[in-house]
Image (cartoon, rainbow, N blue to C red; front, side, top):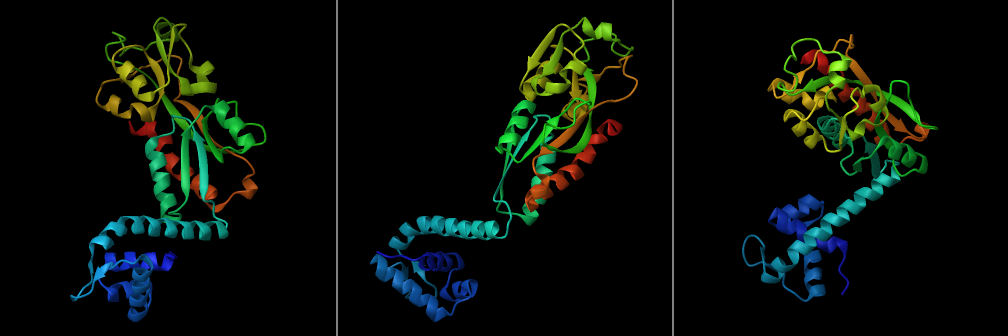
Length: 302
C-alpha cells in the first residue's frame, strides 16, 4: 500500500468543504484531477470512501473510520511544512525563557499575543527558575532568555547581555488586623518584632528587605497571599501581586518611617550573544519592554 500525502490532504479537503468542487477550489486543483486523486486512494485502500450517487459526496462507513486519522496526519504534515519553512527562513522554531515567578502572568500573556500575530508556529517555553539556575543555563545554552529580579547593585551575569525591563514597585503590606495601629507610622523596630513572610523567589534582594529575625519562607505565590490575608505575618511584596487584595481591603499598605521613597528593584532580561539574536528573540525583548511599562507605574494607579 502506497498512500501519498496528496491523497490524504485531498480526502480531508473533500470532507471539510462538503463537495469535490469546493475542495478543488480550496486546493487550487481542477475538479477532474481531484476526483481522480480520490479514486486512486480508494483503489490503494481497496475501500469505497464516498457515496457519489447524490449531488454531494457522502462519507461511507469506511470513510468515517479513516477520517479522524487522516485529519491528524494532514494537520501534522501541514505543521511539518510550516516548520521547515520557518527554519529555512532563519526564524527560530523554539525559544526557552527562564523567569522569576514574580513576572506578571498578564504581561506574559500580552507578549505571547504579540508573538502569535507574526509567528504562529514558534514554541515559546516559559519555565520558572531561580536566578542562579537562569545564570548557569544561559552559560550552557539551555535557555535563550532569562527574566530575573535583581539587587540594585547587580546588573548581569558574567558574559551576558543585560536589558533593564522595569523598576518593579514593592509595597509593605499586612492584613488589617495584624498591626492594631497600622494607620500610624511604623518603624523598622516595630516590623522586626513580628514575623516576616518572604517569597523564595526574592533571591538576591532578600538581604535588602529582611527586617525581622523571624522569617517564614514561602515558594508558591498563591499560598503566600493566602497566609498574608490570614494574618500570618507582614511582607514586602511586588505591587502587582497584591493589587486586588489591597482594593478589597484584605490587605493594607503599611506606612514605614524609614521608607522615604517608593521601594523598587530592577527586573531585567539576561541573554547571551545578543548580536546573533534571531527575529523572535528580538521581538520577545521588544514586547516585554513595552508591556512592562504599565507595571512600573502601578504604585501611581493604586
